[in-house]
Image (cartoon, rainbow, N blue to C red; front, side, top):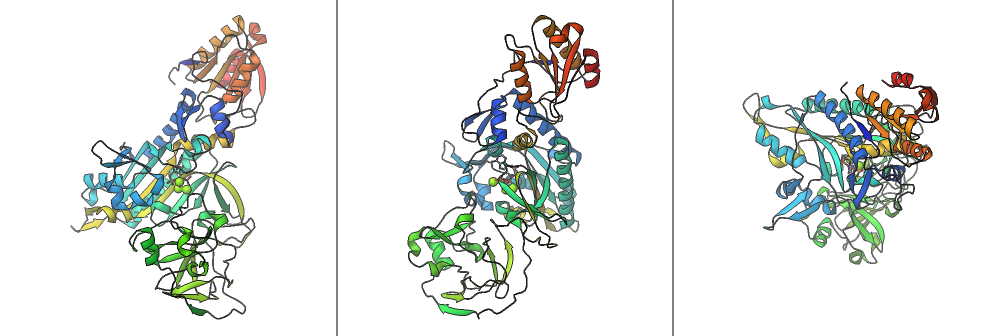
Length: 564
Ligand code: ATP
Ligand code: MG
Ligand code: MG
Ligand code: MG
């Protein structure tokens, strides 16, 4: 190992704080600020101070090594992007307020990239022309921008944050499956190396589009996601993506009855009200009546989500329809599904819409509503989307055992996108038979800055941060607990440790009591703390292991031998 230089605390820009920041809601937020790793610049925008930057770089390095190992190539795309590609994909409007939008001096529209499927598709369209150029996997570690509705919890949810995003391009479905598998395995290795406890769960693809997706979740109280896992089989899913097997309808149910409702708002009238074409794809269209949510749907899909959902809605859900239109007619808007009928209904979870219940009122034809619609008899549940209310002990959809529920932080998300973006941008390559072949894609994200906070959440204790060795800002924190002899011994130990390749923090700050220095060392959370104190004249130091709290007095030579 090459010699490292000793980072002196007397020179380090890291002012530790005794008090928690007033707005801090989570442990990682409190500790990363108090220990001098990050400082808030504006809402959801953070400055990484030297200690924080070291941890961030350590995470990036591990991510980079594992991406390189599966043959992904690192690139760096701009964060400042023109509007047009995002119009082509539909996400310029689909992302709504989440996008940071700006104009250049000529009035042209730009955005700050929230994720880069569009731009990578264009890069590959420019660079790859033949099936021989594929498969290709590209990645970047880059700053992303999302104007999050609730940028809270420090760097866990930033409006500016670091993401590793990668994209795979293949000519066949098998190729995509292989690229996806490679990423999935690389992610497992990354999170293992980082020391992040994690679960892989089924997820919904949301605005990204595509078919299959899985999330990597780090269990933690501070997490904003809830997932279920089954104690007796491999089933695990974000509660957003829980699928329910339909039980056959049993017992007596009143017959389906159609009622005339000529004033029923249709998909067309809703679309007209919103000022969008009826074919538009809107996410999370909400219909509210007198403040009460009565329907959620997607005009482009000609499907509507049923249920009285008010209390269960995710904060991201956008209200697009005002109450005035439907004043006094809540019965008319509940569950309109358009002329194709009520064959396939996707709806947000409502505990009352269980298989076999008959309270749902839905429409099955223009200007007609149906009474006594029975879930499981009159329509199939495709799957629950967006929000699901699952209680601990609910039956596992795959084996029936009682499910467990836990909170977690989403640290990674991998998608089999399929041909959504290739279709939008006409991404073809010349195939083996000389004919153009449409490319199929995957996209894969890791929240690099979020991973730092997730690690802090999982490892910190009441005394402070407590980093796994792989990401810690230093290997050893040497504390000079006294002037003269202790300081000299600390200097000597620090120099020796650095010479053998360890990254060393040396607390050489004058005029601070040993107690203050030790409290700071515990707060900063480097894996080993070596204290030169009272017994320095005899060449004896104290070696503390931060995670377990074990302390041992031993000759400095032995301590050095132990650490190197
Ligand atoms: P979330 O559900 O937390 O809003 P997301 O599903 O919108 O995240 P993706 O689009 O899947 O995020 O992005 C890939 C990864 O980027 C996420 O798994 C997460 O680790 C990270 N990430 C997303 N949004 C943020 C954010 N605001 N701050 C920090 N990291 C983020
Ligand atoms: Mg999000
Ligand atoms: Mg998510
Ligand atoms: Mg996600």
